[in-house]
Length: 143
Image (cartoon, rainbow, N blue to C red):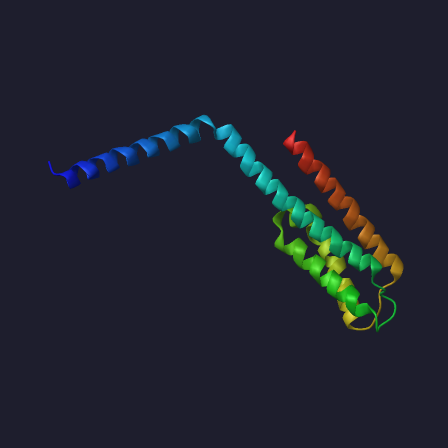
């Protein structure tokens, strides 16, 4: 056995030992690893919800009755619609009824038919209350 063969043998033994140690640690610490991934997914969800809420607040602050100022409202509505469609949790929570309301409001703003402040505030209130309920439900699932 040459010196190079000896080094190769030691290298293989160390590699196998490290692999076995990693496997043992993964199995014995699976609860902690699972908790770490749960925290990561929860952070991602909370970040998404926070961004969603910020767009709802932008919509609240955007006037819709004046045609010249309704562009901000159209952008906010389209973004909210996209966020609901793109997030499975939001889509299953809100369903098609809210999406239809948003789409109708966007079309009416695009056609300069207008949307009343009351309609806009009603939608915003529903979205905010529903997202708050969704957040509470996500915390209940963690407990």
